[in-house]
Image (cartoon, rainbow, N blue to C red; front, side):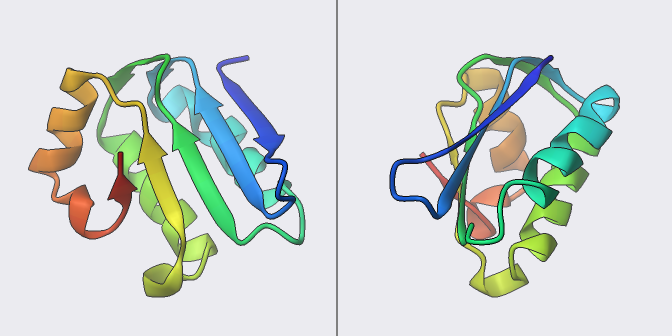
Length: 101
């Protein structure tokens, strides 16, 4: 399974790690990850350390997560991007919507 989730030690941060390609084929698994992550979750960390590819459908999925998490008041960070993934996020101006580290 290319999507792994775990609840952080603080109990209210859901970490979603994506392996390989982050594209339309992962849509349902990604959605299930944050919708069934737990009722106390108020922060999300998207770990892209093992992500090799990101396309426009993945960008859309990140926006859906942002809406689910509260829109402008959401607390989502995207971490551990490789250079190619980071470039796609930068071109798409996602730094204005997410904390990218």
